[in-house]
Length: 457
Image (cartoon, rainbow, N blue to C red; front, side, top):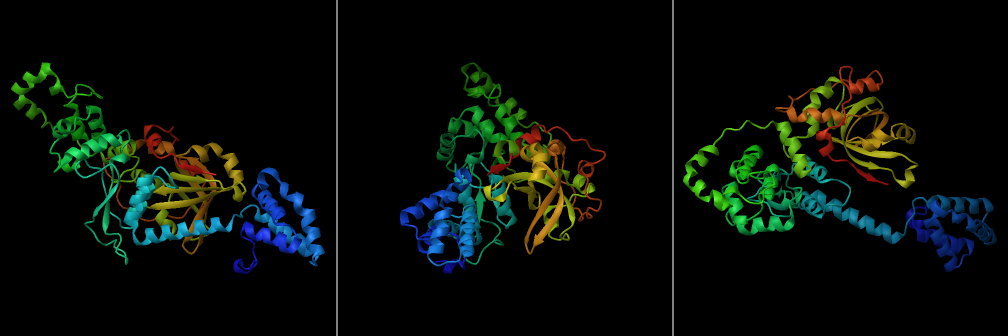
């Protein structure tokens, strides 16, 4: 009965068969044993079956020591066992998902994004992973997007797979914009026909409130019109007298004649030269409105400072010697505390080059609970462990560095490419993470708009 699992009970049905065949349980009694296994952590009732199980196996000619080991195996099995049907279902879903992601990453990513909120990762993580695999992602745009994310022919076919996938670009949809509803997006797409040629054209043809058009401008959706975020917002302000206005100024009868007679002056005013918005400010606004950015990763803006303090990137970890101390930092994507892990926390961090898996032992978690739970940008000193391509960092020290991101909106451009930093040799004290010349800033607006990280138990 354990042949196909190599002598190890994996499924609840196998434990029931052991009880029936080996210990003489009736099917009804074996089902009660199954229920006791399923609630072992909460009720501890599995011990109620021990005496009957041992006596039954001994009565059937098994050695008492063997019977004891069988029951202990069933007790341990209670921590992880589940029905074979569940195992088959999960395995099938995992296989199908992996196959689609491998051969049709464009369709896979698009479908996942359209299914949010669900699953393990945020939209920013899914988009980053797709781009890491040479996928092309295009921004939300008033002339090209629909409510849902969709696929368009890609310009670069380097990501094409043997099965013919990867040839489509991912166009982000209006559903990604905070505060824009599906009915509003559908009105826009229904009247768009061959496209809009100005903010004013979009306003009059859609009839959408100025407040909605302002949300589109803040999300930088007018690039196909030659307008960046700041220029588009300036044009939107020309529609309404105040932020959040529902109607354009020219809709008001009092101003209709004046606007007609001063059309030439108004045209001259729209040509005002606005200062260029810094890239860092664009990224902050992207996260504020879209929960992601295609322009740059937030951590890239402070990389030169991190490098000076011996932080290494996710991509550099693969070249770093195993079983040595490293200092890393990243946005917190996920925190996991599985019931079978005895209180161990598994965290996933993300920087501009990839993801970093962190293991936090219970003792460190209890000492740094607020940092582990509350940090959006986490600094870690720990031991790098690697087994082939699988690697993780076992944390020894943790610091909430969320406040370090406060300056990115002032950055004019990305830092220059950097060389791999030196290995941390002095044990990576917390003072090194923070930096002698740095003080831990309180998290401000920038850190507040970044993903909080998802928690799973």
